[in-house]
Length: 90
Image (cartoon, rainbow, N blue to C red; front, top):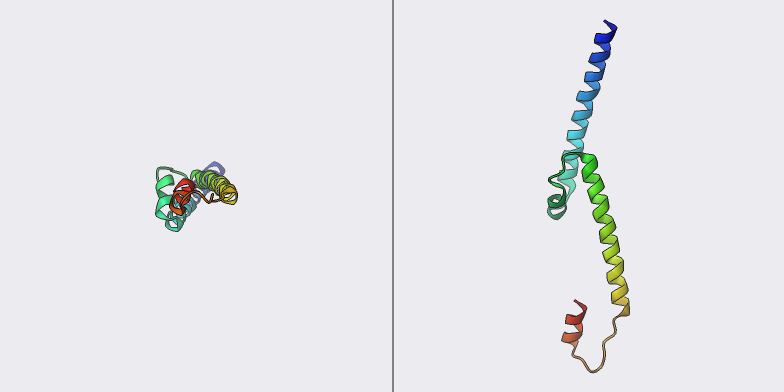
């Protein structure tokens, strides 16, 4: 009887975890923009989605810092056109 109760309790915890996991994954899917969702749609677990989003966040921060440094260092030379200056920055 005690073993049966323990099995029932364990099964109830598993079912509850699976329900909460499904809700978490659905919430993440609904909250993400299409470009973000595209990057994580193949992942099965909510924890994997969070990990990938965190990794992309780090990459975005790095790119932002690099572009900010580049932006701060550009200076238009008087002998080039504004269009060439803009094209060179891109």
